[in-house]
Amino acid sequence: MRGITAACRALCLAAGLGASAGAGAAVAAAESVVDVARATVRLPAGEWLSLARSTVDAVRVNDQRSIPAEVLTLALVHDQQLDALVTITATAGGAGGLVNWTSSCEPPEPGIWSARPVGANPSDMECAYASAAFAPDDFLSESTDWGREARSRGLRAPDEMVLASAVVGSRMGSWMSVEVLASADFAGAQEPLSGVGDAALPSDVDDRHAAYAVQLLNRVRDCVYSIRGQMDFPPIHFIPAAPAEARIARLDL
Image (cartoon, rainbow, N blue to C red; front, side, top):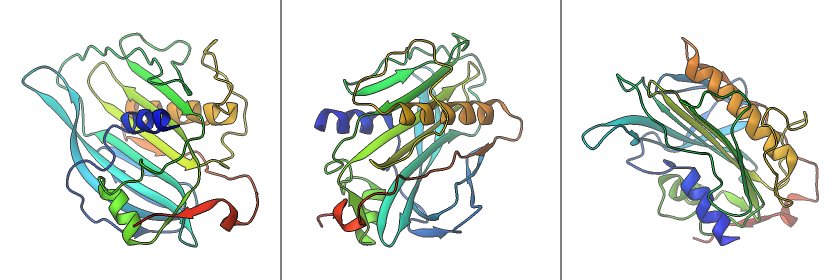
């Protein structure tokens, strides 16, 4: 699944880039709210750690100008176990003019599902992604700020992870993406997959994870087009399984 890992790294475009600030800060266990550029995001209940915060060029408008975005990477943990890694990327505003998005939402790799919502404006970029399970060995590397912070805290990584993510870019240049990398026992959405037409789902991608990606897309879209830029994160739940020791591996230092 190394191809999946590389593709997931490409989808999480800004995670770990740039200089980190406030890495390792704890976020309140429940009803946590974080600000990322103009976005105010209410996190699901759980124990959250802030691993890295940075600024990157998220959108290239032309050869002379790009739009900066703020990036926040958070870890959902319990008992030193990394249950999910969440990266939120958002711009503070638009481009000051129209942006011609070229993304077609095509999956970058076999084993990754992608779709545009039914009725999406062709001038806007709206994409949902979900992946098959993959080994996170080389993804959680020391080449990222959050990877180094995770190792310094002795967090244990799952043997396998899955991706659910959403990207929205408005024709005026506002951009926001949310990526969830969760352990493979991630429950996903409770509602069935809908709202994306006949986008074919690979056999090794869980439809509940694809449905969660669509939920993320709807929440991100509402945030991008709202005046206040608020987003309520969908709940992150896991399927009860074997004891934790059977499904985690300590990160190699």
